[in-house]
Image 1 (cartoon, helix red, strand yellow):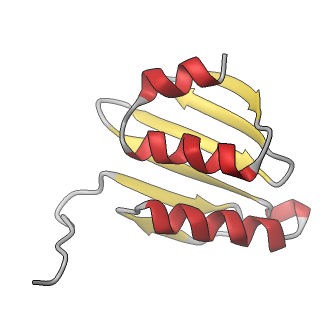
Image 2 (cartoon, helix red, strand yellow):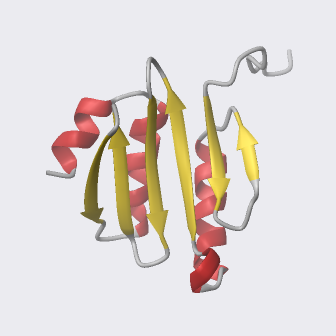
Length: 106
């Protein structure tokens, strides 16, 4: 049986500073975006992922590994140490584990 994705409602999305956008993403889209951002010029070297619950929860990363984490309209700045750490934070975001992310970026 073919894998089935719910497409009736957007649960999350990814968007690149250069304009690319995709709804209902998974870990493979995160991995691709991390590879892509490393090849982009500085002006377009950013992407963000939003997970929609009662509010929009966003993590934006820039090519220099600086992050803006916005949960419930409160923004926290964070400097990641590696692309692996960025990937881990995005995977937690997709799982809606917001408290775990907040603990890691304090």
